[in-house]
Length: 101
Image (cartoon, rainbow, N blue to C red; front, side):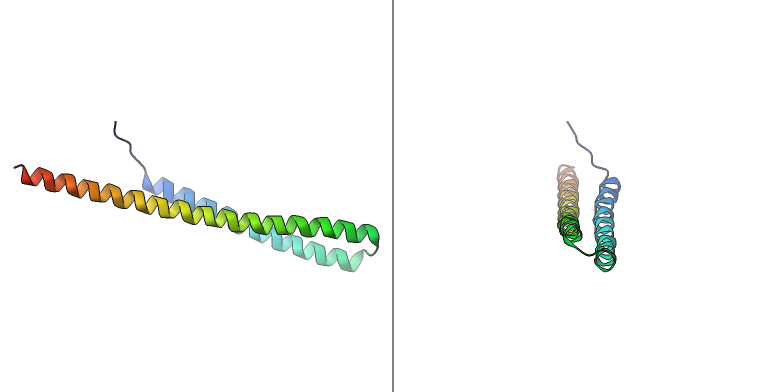
């Protein structure tokens, strides 16, 4: 059974993962702005509790962005490795075919 990988699709998917990481990071920065605006506009114990929750969410978003970026890089590296191995195998097959002629 021969498996076939469309490397263009795989690379595009890795790029989409990286784009998602960028978008999460962008949204976490927007959340930072909201937190800063909230600090200015709202004071008190309830405000402090709300801001603490927002900060926790922002921290999780940043961690998710970093993780997603890392997964995109790892995926791209695996695609590169598989592509290289496939090319080496094709060259070996071609070389073996020439030797048998």
